[in-house]
Amino acid sequence: MEYKQVSTAGGTRTVRIAGPESRHVVLLLPGLDDRPDVFDGVSERLHNSDLKTVAVEDARGLDGDAMVAILDELSLPWVHLVGNREGAELAWTLAARTFGRFASLVACDRGHPAVADQDGVVRASDCSPVELPTTIVIGSSLKRASADGSGRLVYSDFRVVQLDGVGNIPSDATAELATEIALRTNPW
Image 1: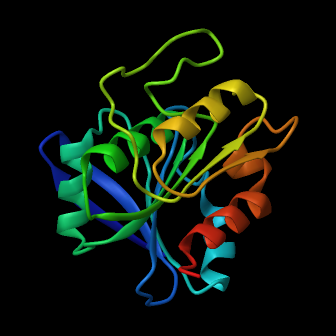
Image 2: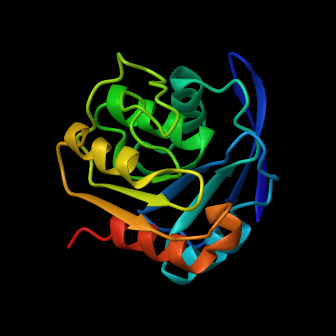
């Protein structure tokens, strides 16, 4: 695994780059309370599927412009987005506002920001619909209604995968998440 320091307007970020040379790269965005190695098990499985991974160690303070700057510095014109909780919120926003940089979206425990969550909170009413094949993987922290409601704001193939009793999807459902990501990266 290669650790690389990437400069953005908000400061320097550490990313973990690993896996085979591949035209398919998966960008992994953690939640705010996730450990830097939260995606290591998922990444290992993705490497066995001939996918390269780029994992941001800390997503605090990242926005769309900073993420595009990271992709530009790493010379990654096209990636598959995966986010966990707050990282998924960022992924939804990136997918909605940055046309042509992303091939698919897998969001863990977060619905589209313009759909009310289980507490009735709409995080970003101005967030546009997403035109990417999208999968929402839900564990114990997202209600099914919020995930299903996100489907009206996805103008492409849309799936919801429910994993009952799973607290933190990347660490507690490694195989299941890796499978959903691999399915989204396959162009068939």
